[in-house]
Length: 232
Figure 1: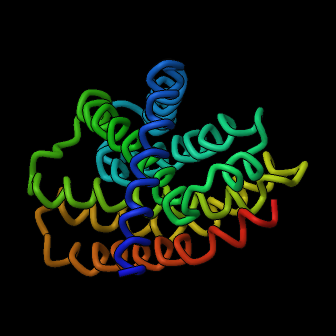
Figure 2: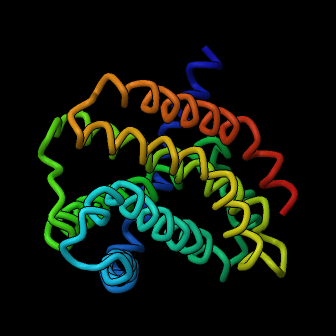
């Protein structure tokens, strides 16, 4: 009975934290006014670097797409902690009585939803700027697009909290995130490429790797968020 109550409390707190973060983002419009233009600018710069009408540009679309998402994830995670920094992130949540696992899942869900919105816009961007065809095996592309930001958000929130109280967090966090997220970026790129090329059988193992990565970091976050929060 206690375990059932604990799970219910965790999901309730997840919903509360997620709702709070998304309401703040909707009011501030940081995603639309800053993150989306930044990600689209990254796509444009990659396009100019490789040249218009270049077959290499179309071939490199999956990698460039997920690099843009990764850069945007960095901004979204940093923003997720910045909205708490004024009032003291650790003290505020410790005194709130919220389940630490619920706080973690709430923040992960909020960042994931923001990245999903961004992915839709970037998908239109690569079709318009690069001439890429994402309609092939659209269902598989959608699954990849849903699974990948979960992993990026989970690892970002874990490492973001780890360095939240360090004075060098603004430089250390990108180094940690880019290093740990490299497997996600590689797997998402490979799965995306296989989907666009119509070789789903080649993309399934990479999708499996993405799911494993998500499961591992979600489990780590649920288990470690409480002690990490106490150390702030």
